Length: 259
Length: 242
Image (cartoon, rainbow over all chains, first blue to last red; front, side, top):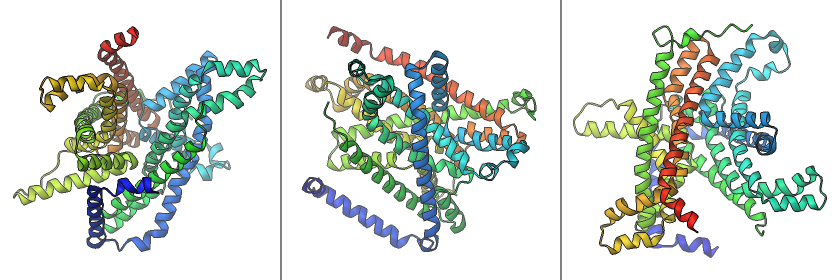
């Protein structure tokens, strides 16, 4: 505890903290916050949507990133080019453009087929969130695929050879040595990628998914306030990023770093 | 079911949207380049504040980079856009002008530059720390002023270390310009959406815009890699000698 507290007790930091506190109090007192209590449930729903988008796209995207990376490292030539091309195209174009392509393009295309309109999937495909989820997942898979490719190639060759010399099957080598070692190498970057993904989630608001950003936009339109909702949004994202960073650092420290 | 794709929609002249797309593309490049240049300037200032500044400057720079890297770009852009135009308008009114119309391009560059600056600060700080300290001390021993040391030694020596990170930032800058479409700037993504929704040829326009962005990325990749080889020319020899 003292290690955390001592750097905060330096005089200039105390003064800066006091100034920041004064600024926050001034904001709380002089700005208009009466819209907050009535909108809390909606804000909570928006926050849950943001977190669901983040968690879902990270988990599914990571699962997709593994084959993308493996194909690039050891796949046959056509698969290698395909996954390399996929990663290049997704990483070379803006996420917003991909999102709009999926939502407007695929949405309009699906509506043309009666087979799809009559199928069980149509009630979902008519909503916006599957397209937002798809775009976020594809984007995360491409960026994370690139990271995992580097991590897979970075595992020292001797370790894999040793595993093979012990008589492990290729699958066992992958499960016991190659994948854990690669994941360990990728963990620090994974934390950064997840923060980046959190910061991409508000884009889904542009296709009418009601995440936190969309709720704030709605509040801004109804109350005609410019700054207050935006400042709240900044504060919430700051907290989310902070919590994520702490959680991922905790996870990283749990993995033994001894070689 | 599939109508054949009507490529005449991409024609350069009025009924086609090709000209409008290219104009939007040019505007995107201007926004990205301007924001990137501003980001580099902020980055150098921020890195100097973090490395050489006093206690207060150091902490302020830390707060700036932390906030920039923790809050979504879209939210930052909205905030900077409203705060920036509001402040400008108030300043103009207090000086006696009746509310000025803020130039869209300048506002966009400002917004992207402020975001880029946060990341550039970290990249440049790391690159400056990679420069052997003896080189900077030698320059100081010659009696150069701090500015001259910066201009003649620190900046050129840190360039090769900064290039990989800065190249990454340029890619981010080109893609971040698309976010300005949400605020209503008529750059490539916004124009594409207008074209697509008025002709209902969604795939054609979104894919063409994607091709333009991809082309920009790939071409700048090649150029940046060449520049990196040039900037590292002394370092590679030193590395081989070891």
